[in-house]
Image (spheres, rainbow, N blue to C red):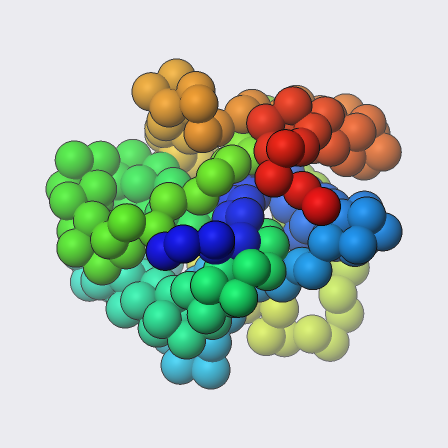
Length: 223
Ligand code: TMP
């Protein structure tokens, strides 16, 4: 792809605050006259949003680790082809809430399918599309789950939202610890692409750290 837009992904465990940070970041970049597309995974295209429901609702053990991974990759392929690639080709900056690193960490690490296996499957589906910058929001697992639980309980009547948070939230603590460790390993392996952001801080400070990382690494490509 020539002259493509910048691709930024936000990653991390449950309750780390990615979605709020995505909105703050999008606004800050729009204030700098950058054209921004905000999207998410699993989801981001009509078909992928349908697959999302299969993944985020229902019983913890409803899928095998491999079937879950293939559903995620099916959703990713649709999202990439229909949403992300056209936006990047038109020069739009894309901020995606979760992408391939979530599959490596959650299914490869958390569900113990193996990170090599997940990366190999991903390579076939994702091809050459690699984020320019990945912000990994890191937080103690217990605090993150408490935050996510509070969010679920606070959404009275929003049954769908509650269901979707709960399937992964209901996975055991060791699953979430393995996932967190895997995100940290990915960062150690790819320090040029990934930056750890301390998500224990106040929301404004997290945003400030995100903006610092973006200016350090991408300023020359911004308008
Ligand atoms: P969200 O709560 O950040 O919107 O994401 C929905 C859930 O999907 C979240 O609990 C993590 C999970 N997930 C995976 O397990 N693997 C993946 O590849 C992606 C994109 C999400």
